[in-house]
Length: 264
Image 1: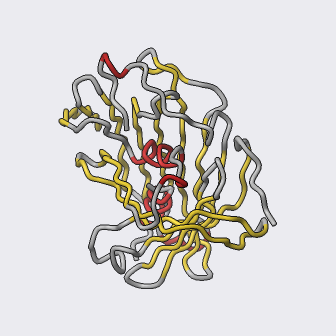
Image 2 (image 1 turned 45 degrees about the vertical axis):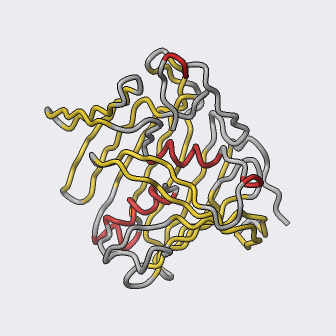
């Protein structure tokens, strides 16, 4: 497998919606799941080999973007150990997410994968349904549908959902803009379960992000996600079936959650 894909997978797992027209400016999405100062660290391993580390962190203070209060969310991924010697990855992804509507105003990514470099900034103009992407000296404007998100804000929006009101087997669709394309992040709600972690057992919600058919993943249902069955809804474990082997991600540490996780 290409080692540079590990960072993308780790972030996309965590991987993996509301516009501001005049009549929507007071829209509020109830959120008891996350807030400033939250940080979760993950370990990514390929079989028995530690492959990468990922971190999802909300800044300790609110940022003001477009005169709106926003969560500043940083997602970082880096290869470690033998993987770092073979293919060095240092990626940073950032989203400024409106604290009330859980909507992105700005998305940034700084990619460092061996000699490859890419810095991109996307500014969302929800009044015009546009996303303006800037890479080096080139700027492109894309028309996007209502309620468009980046891959980070989409993940945080999913954490606000009440899964008690969602039927098992239902597919949640989140319109997302990434890499100049608009697509629907599709996630199937599988049900409830209990898993074992380094901290103990935990009750979880099982989700199945539906992956597009390609040579990298084994099939559409190759990714399985377990998130805490509480108001936090943070990913505790991820499994990905690849064309060769499997990739897993487990929570390594956490702090600043809105509510303590109940382990047993």
